[in-house]
Amino acid sequence: MPNTQRTPHDYEALRHHALTLRRAGLSRRQIRDRLHVHNNDILNRLLEGAPVPEWTKRPNAKDDLRAKARELRKQGRTYDQIQVELGCSKSSISLWVRDLPKPERKRTREEASAIARRGWEATLRRREEERRRTKDEARREIGELSDRDLLIAGVALYWAEGSKDKPYARREHALFVNSDPGVIRLYLAWLQLLGVKPEHIGYRVMIHATADVSAAERYWADLVGVDVATFQKTTIKKHNPKTVRKNTGDDYHGCLVIRVLQSAELYRRIEGWWYGIVLGAKAVVPSEVRPS
Image 1 (tube, one colour):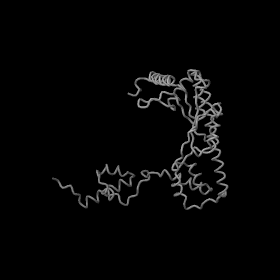
Image 2 (cartoon, one colour):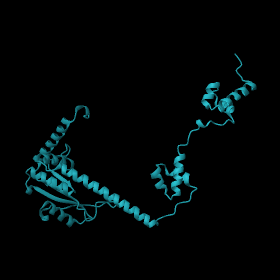
Image 3 (cartoon, one colour):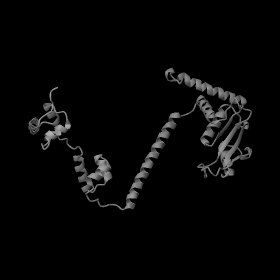
């Protein structure tokens, strides 16, 4: 096997050659490939003391940003303002300008807070306007409901909120409970569409004991247009002291329970309509996206 170890004379000759190439402007990679020196430690020793060619130096991309940040800070800009203008992080800005004096506060804390509060209030008003506009546009898209529209809406509403029959608990009667006055109005309009007579509808309030029971009874009686005396006895729900209730105050009226008397046949029709809606919806869904 040949001896591959270099002598000191060979090393000095190689170093001289490497320095000559470096002074000629070659990069480390070019010198490595010319001299076939692929060991970084040896290459470092060969080039030790030789200046790095300017063309191989990587420019610092943040040097320009740093200079601009310092100039803006000298003009009295805050970190937030500099960040918005230059698009760099506050941590970088702080590092670049920490030796510069802080700009003088142009406003008192109270003035700055008032300005911020007005800005936030304007944002909230704009968001509320956007909400109102979206809701108004959606309301206009619905327009007038046909009888079929109301029929389907009422069936879906009942199946979501109404009492349902179970094999282990036969409940073939139409019983509906809700606290939303809009939902109650829609449900009653649906019952009217189905030909349910007013005298076949019973009402009962269900409410927490801590609420104003009499006021709630009057509220629901006025909403459905009947005498409060015709209401069945109110169901009082006991308050659990461990529960923090949010449905309190003057706007809390409990729930209204609506029962259609002698409604077994009506309930069976509701259940049949619901299954018809489900099958109809399944029919229009492409088979490739239907759940298995």
